[in-house]
Every structure is written in C-alpha cells, then in structure tokens.
Length: 106
Image (cartoon, rainbow, N blue to C red; front, side, top):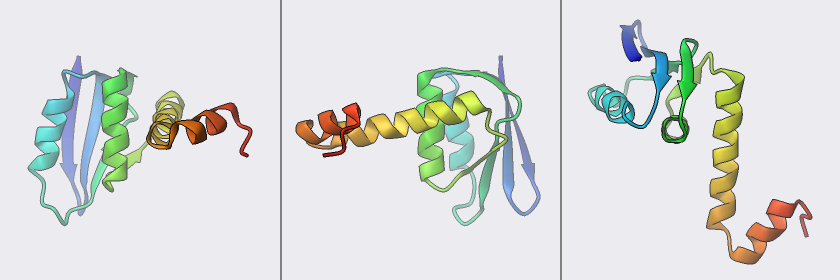
C-alpha cells in the first residue's frame, strides 16, 4: 500500500509511506503539479519501504527538477545514483560509453 501525506510550513512536504511503484507515480505527479511553481517541495522518504525502477527514476527526475529528497534510505540513494550514471553512459557516443563503463578513463 502507498500513501502520500502533505504538510505545508513554508515549504511543501510530501511524506511518502509504504511501497511505491509505477502505478503510484501518476498520483504523486498529479499532487506535485498542483503546487505553486515558486514553492519549495520536499519529498520525505523515511517511511518509503519498497520501490521499483519506475519509482526510482521518477524520484531521480524530481531531484533533477529541484525537489529535495530527505530521509532517503541508502538503497534508494544508491539506486538513484546508478540510474544517473547509466543515463550519462547511454547518452555518450558508443566508444566513450564503453571506455567509461570499464573504468579505463582513456
């Protein structure tokens, strides 16, 4: 089960609770879209117990868009970083991606 609790105190905090998967992303996106553009948004992940790849990618996109992720469990943070690295490798020319993926750096 997945729940979203919204709190506002100068910033808008969304506490994500439970298991987040691809089916939950549109629900969270809709709530984020309702917020004022100039308001800082924080996603509190302390009570997020399980995520799938789509949820991790969404959280990574949120962070790139300036949304702050707080209380992020280590496994989610590591997964986000792996997704970022994979994306950087995919957008480079094939030769560069191969070199970086193998860590030779030349």
